[in-house]
Image (cartoon, rainbow, N blue to C red; front, side, top):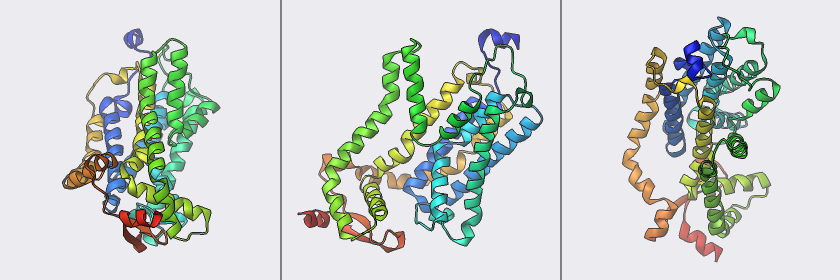
Length: 351
């Protein structure tokens, strides 16, 4: 322990936050996010695997804390890896399912009775994970493995509990990362270049959204007007679905990819300068690799569709002059009643 203190300020726990564990968690979330966004009807198996993974992590962490076999820091890392943007996405779809609203994951999280258990499972791990992170932030040091003398963990208390409970919400985590790097820059601990690089994903997303809204504002308004919707909320969801259908990659980036980038950065900030960044093979890390296999196989099966997806990207269509032939208009905002109308007909209607 003394030797560890001379180099690092925190002892490692490779089964919780080792390199392979983190990489597997990041890849599993990314791959399942791709399946949800681009092939949602085949996402039910991946969602079940994700639920099994997060419950196993939480139960293992609770048992480890009960036996005082986990430090406060690594207990918090368990919650951070579980509360990802994907977890938030699953929670939102579950809530929509409870309110009988159609969504991408109707194949497993719809309002139907046979999907009640998966919906309860998602809500359950949400509540357990948030309670877990609050407990790790405000409970006594006697509940955890005593840290080495050099380990001075300052991120604990009520403020840490509230902050970390909100960090997995998309763009709250991004704000925390940007604030952390801004403070580090003002303290001279990082450079302006690093701060700029960290800001790039959010800047590109905002720029692309502004350009897309300006370009498609007129036609989207015309499409929504065709639906004759009187409710403001229904008009909002109509805009949301039509915009996501016209710009699927931008929709994927805004809902999932960009928040995930900042979630990864936030996790790596917490682990910066710790011995967890030294690769040490362990049983837990080997098991973590197998978590990636199921979503990886699903994405692999989507490869034949990649060429069509790439040619349908808005920048590629702009360069090649190719128009998106058909896009569904949700006549009553229900997936099963969507109509198919040509984009050119929308443009004619607008004129």
